[in-house]
Image (tube, rainbow, N blue to C red):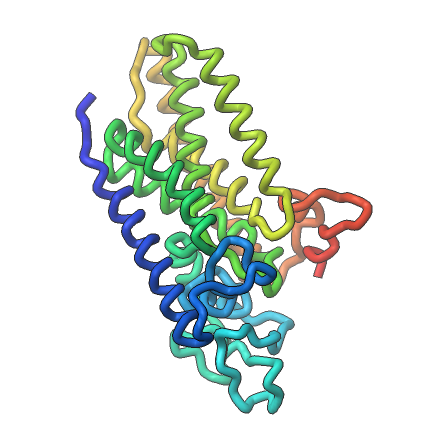
Amino acid sequence: MKKHKPFFIYIVTGIQIFMMLISFYKYYMATGSLIAPITTNIMLGPDAGTLIQLGSRFVPCMKKTNHTYVECPPSIKYSEYYNNKDYCSFADICGFGLEEGETPNQWFRFFTAIFLHGGIIHLILNLIFQIRTGVQMEKDFGTWRIMIIYLASGIFGFVFGGPYAGVSNSVGCSGSLYGLLACLLLDLIENWKIIVKPKKDLIKLIIVIIISLGFGLIPNIDNFSHVGGFITGILTGLIFMPSIIFSKKDLKIKRILMLISIFILVFMYIMVFEQFYAKTKKCSWCHYINCLPLKNNWCLSYDA
């Protein structure tokens, strides 16, 4: 197979590192410190206010909600709107030209949040997989394919979890990386016949997927992005990933799966955007994707 140059992964990585530096600078200019206290952000990064103003997925900036104000993060200069230094209006926090009383509609946050990270630890953990695995995948499969899979998975993950996010903000390329991880699994299954030790590789991949999705159930981690990105990775992989054809029957099966995946992917995108923007009843069990129903149940926070 032709080897491609991994332009996309390198460019995305460069943007993500640049935005991390910008977030440090913006937080420093607002507070005089490079990073927020550990009690505020254990990832060694700025506070939520800085990330929101740079484009994190923050639902009150994206559509009208029942929330009218929020406690001011240290990095946000409060206005006189509430005449209380402890509270900020969303016009104060959202930025990007949002004015007081205007209906929020910053839809682009589903995209921009992919390029932001909560801190140094968050960035390093994601870039280890992105560079180590994403670069090789782009070399093997091509820039346009990886770009579509990466962005489609990341955006879907953020839209999927939007209805349950409340006033918490979410950033990171984890959804995109889970999309790539799903493509690794798909590539292994589709080319099973020519893999040296396919069962061993399959077991390792499944263990990695189970453990990583399990960690996503820890509070303050957006597991919706992980699950949504993984599902999208499977579907976009069936549509865009190159594959070896072993027989006419194999070709027929793969073409049918491609067509089915196109319809499912379009349907899923329509459903999640409708769920996010339309005033319909939310899924009654979906929040368990992001939490465990323990005795001291943090799942209750998703019922609001």
